[in-house]
Length: 406
Ligand SMILES: Cc1cc2nc3c(=O)[nH]c(=O)nc-3n(C[C@H](O)[C@H](O)[C@H](O)COP(=O)(O)OP(=O)(O)OC[C@H]3O[C@@H](n4cnc5c(N)ncnc54)[C@H](O)[C@@H]3O)c2cc1C
Image 1 (tube, rainbow, N blue to C red):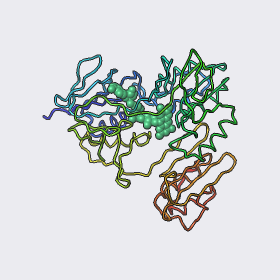
Image 2: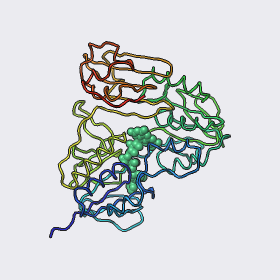
Image 3: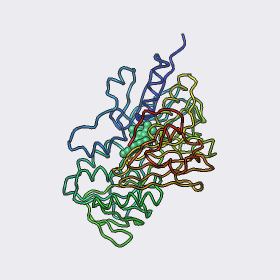
Image 4: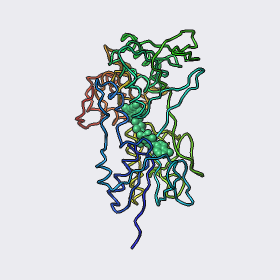
């Protein structure tokens, strides 16, 4: 009888869990071990801001309970993988003995960047449940919060805190507009007005140079007192040391989730994939993409043919307090841009050579799924009507989409 394949997954996020589910489905007799260093079952990282803003002290709702792991026969190990010995087919752990594998998945996510600042000894970042917990326990109505970074996550955190009516929320942003890379400058200015009108302080084209006690001294000469300081200045792929692994800005995977090393797969934020249509590598940063990659890698590991489809880019979430959808490539150069600004609404469509290239919908996401399906399709005949929320969306794709996103 052939010995069962031993599967080892490093990382207990959406990519790792999606892979585990597929492995178990296709090879239920293969033992799965998952190693994670957060010490809690899988939770929705994208819901952390919602949890912070909730007016309670309850625990974060888990996406999977311990019963899920038990049902799949998963052995969970809480430890940090320091390195992988692909010759001996084992991972080296920080605290425990090395663990062997037949097939390995690296799904280790990303870690937040930290800017070194004179006088700053410790800093909060915003990535994990533990980070969110520290922020949540550190705030009260009298708290003055200073967020370094006015990108997507910094704004999401500011939006959550604004719901809690704090004494002071200040954002310091190096670029002179908020929301990059999702927003270009005009869209950033639109959002900026909204943030300022809520009474938040914004320091654009500025940075924190020095911290003395509880005061941040900005490059512009401003001095800001704070009680809680959080850095949100982007992330980088995180992975253990693996000799010979092909890495660009992240671990490079093919369309089946495989790396360049035998029996080593990767998925999620720690990876980058080849975008054939644009002839470049794209880092993975979207929850949905991480889930898809985890599924494909899980199938491949279990010997089932699966391929990552090249979808147009789609990210739909909340920026500050505005629901947005970013579809395809709305901010690239060239083509014709149609813009619609209304009370609380900012919609932008980009058409290149008569074909829909991208859309940015803020405040009103009506038509989101039709636009997503219509990327690359001819839309010139509709002129600027396509940017309007009341456009007959189903005409674009010839299919009735049931979705109604606002
Ligand atoms: C606050 C926040 C809001 C977000 N909102 C959205 C959103 O609205 N929409 C969206 O599409 N995306 C959003 N994202 C991004 C999305 O959550 C990530 O793309 C996704 O969760 C990444 O999943 P993953 O499985 O690749 O990695 P992770 O979820 O990071 O999981 C990796 C796990 O591996 C562990 N690990 C890492 N290295 C090791 C090691 N050496 N040994 C052991 N364990 C290790 C990590 O601690 C972590 O638990 C958000 C992210 C954050 C932080």
